[in-house]
Length: 158
Ligand code: FES
Image (cartoon, rainbow, N blue to C red):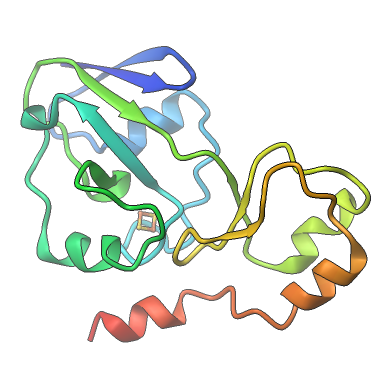
């Protein structure tokens, strides 16, 4: 068992050896969209391992390729669906701020409201609407012309 500390939630969860880091996030009801279904081709399970990386499996080439395309990725970045617990020490994970959307229509109910967190692209994690901006119908219409699919990352995986 390893102890996973999730920040900025400041919540801990015990994780079994060989379980995925993603499972620890889901156990704490973190809103992980898993847009690609755990195939290492999206940004929606991206996180930063702040401490305890030695208790995790090494990063794979496939994971590296996807992380190279994600906005805001650093040397601490991992895809939680590809990250397995291998040790018993503490691991500190920082979750990127933001809400991922698969379609501009996902924002319809939020028209007229200020975003409490950045709205992010599911494939590359880029910020489509910054925190504090008002979601307008015209902005949604602009986003309807944006490719929010995972195709661009899948093509790079060939
Ligand atoms: S769920 Fe898509 S990369 Fe992990």
